Amino acid sequence: MKILLTGASGFIGRHILRALEQAGHEVVPVSRRHGVDFKHMLTPEDWLPHLKEVEAVINSVGVIAETRGQTFDTLHHRAPAALFRACVMAGVPRVVQISALGADDQAITPYQLSKKAADDVLRSLPLEWFVLRPSLVYGEGGKSSAMFRFMASLPIIPLVGDGRQRIQPVHVSDVVATVLQCLPAASARRTLDVVGAYPLTFVDWLQSMRLEAGRKAAVTLPIPFSLIMATAHVGRFVVPMLHPDNLRMLQHGNTADVQSLANFLGRMPLSVEEAP
Ligand SMILES: NC(=O)c1ccc[n+]([C@@H]2O[C@H](COP(=O)([O-])OP(=O)(O)OC[C@H]3O[C@@H](n4cnc5c(N)ncnc54)[C@H](OP(=O)(O)O)[C@@H]3O)[C@@H](O)[C@H]2O)c1
Image (cartoon, rainbow, N blue to C red; front, side, top):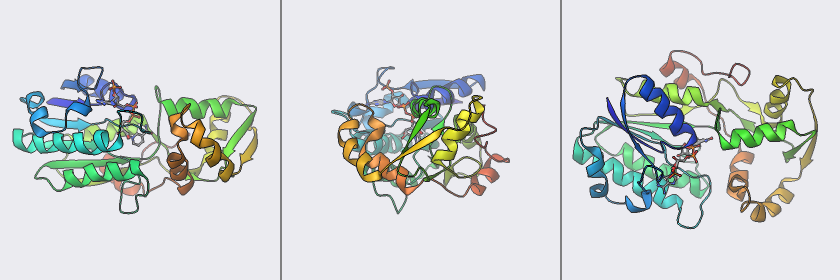
């Protein structure tokens, strides 16, 4: 198949790109590194020249925090919505949208709401669509994975609050497997939560990384949530993931029922112990 992949230079996009090429697909990569800035792709007409003979589109562009010129509304909502509408006009039948867990009716943060806005546009169109909502994605090349591995390597692990937030990290290989499964799947027009095998607490995840690395469990240092939030207003400029909204999302928890994904894949996704 000829497939247009946005976010092809990103963490998840690079893994998808590699898998698509290995499966023999022809990929049209899109990102600023490939010469296309979503900022300038806000109408369907902007996208039409990129969609010639394209049979499927995978959208994997996103940012975890806004910076000057990189707004959620542009990157998550307006440019993807224009792309999806262009797919209808160009006769591209199938679209796989990488959204995020929490982009649902309970969405609270601008990140989640902007994702949901594009998901809703896609769901309203006459296309064979998939909206994939991954939880925290980890694996080789992930920025957050590297940060969490670093935290886990410290002799004393600092925790957000008591560290008991429930998360359900999904390995990037399972995100890729889900995307690949969407391409031939007969049952389109589906929203799927893409999560790991089971939920665990944030502190247990960090400690399990230590054990895997052959270290003993570490002493932890719970930092009151209010104190972290106060410092996050400055810290976000150093580490965008420390934006107060991202901490709120973490505190809220990030889990979902795994069964629909397991049925779709025909197997359980990996647990954190099984993942490479
Ligand atoms: N990683 C996670 O844990 C996770 C969890 C849930 C959902 N997601 C979603 O999955 C998607 C991919 O995430 P990721 O972790 O792979 O992010 P990433 O590593 O930061 O990659 C983001 C991609 O978007 C591209 N991009 C950014 N700004 C752009 C612009 N103005 N125009 C065109 N392309 C632009 C980047 O390429 P250039 O910089 O070259 O333009 C890159 O290819 C995002 O939608 C994210 O919200 C990720």
